[in-house]
Image (cartoon, rainbow, N blue to C red; front, side, top):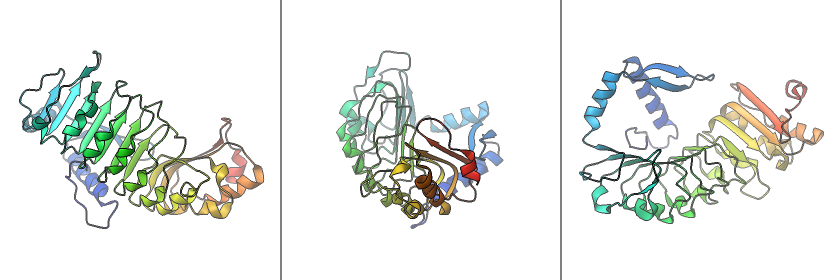
Length: 317
């Protein structure tokens, strides 16, 4: 999707994913991919590729893809995909020359340090950065105006620079295994083309006005706040939200009517987690009534932060 291979009609927030799933299923049916493995919800989470097919695919893309395990930068003029690996080595700072990467569309890096050199990749659509050598992203990342996918994992970042909110074409934002990460930029709602946000650390609070991200389909964590623009009603505007979500700080939801504003019943949520800091029996039972999930829900967790599960008799009463 980030590379632009999936086209959708205007006005549709889910068409590209549907087209991508269709393409994948065709490749699976024709044995390009094999032995697909599914999770408990029926989603394909892994598959295999025969060695011969893999070698054939590599032979086709080798003229446009460069895999480096050192700092050599020869013959990069036509490179569209660049993968750099320094795993198990001393972290390297790469001496990039901007004019050499005018066609680069995809960059995957393990443990390389770029600094402001990232801004040289003007045509970049995919950026994946791995490794604890990444402490922060430069403000100059805003110059990557074509970026569709930003993936950061196993890094030591605490937050993203405010300039990320100027990447107006961004579709997918992933921040995983970044255990020091505390919050997303407050003005993330500027990125109206965002379709998927993947995070696995609970932020201190959510960006303001998340309800403006009307194409958003994936949001695994939402933290309810007290201020305007941070309440649970922001979820109500996310009509395309689906999959799984954990909702924290439900003690800030005043009553059943406010809980209903999340409109969980209208969303195809199959895994739902509801979390309170403190359990007030009568008040929070009413909130729970308002958080009626979609009929296809397959997994429900209700807890307060003490770790003790919510009484099952209240769930199924």
